[in-house]
Image (cartoon, rainbow, N blue to C red; front, side):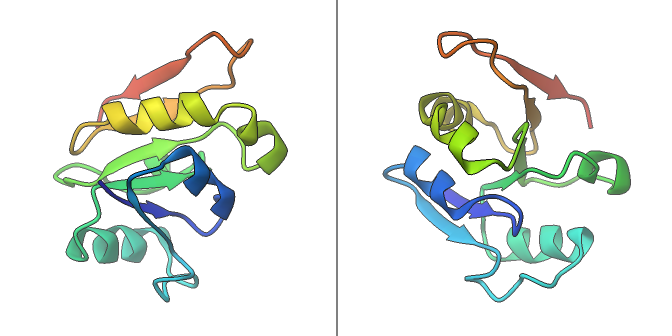
Length: 119
């Protein structure tokens, strides 16, 4: 799977995604793009999944008709995310085209919590 990490998503999240083609928005030269432009560029470049920490994207952008899957993490705090690499990786693996999923903070390391969001 070809995965893009948004500019606010810690680059270390790639450790949760072994075996995938993971890029960052900065690495792609898209670090300064607004969300709408980033979505267009990511789709045009053939990305399957965008991982974000921006809780406002789904409210600010019309996601209807997009084929790019979007995974929203509950925080961009790297040490917190590191405790949940497995959850992040498993959730990313399960994402379907055009799906938006908000991954909520786990109550403990054995608990999965995600919310599918209708587009």
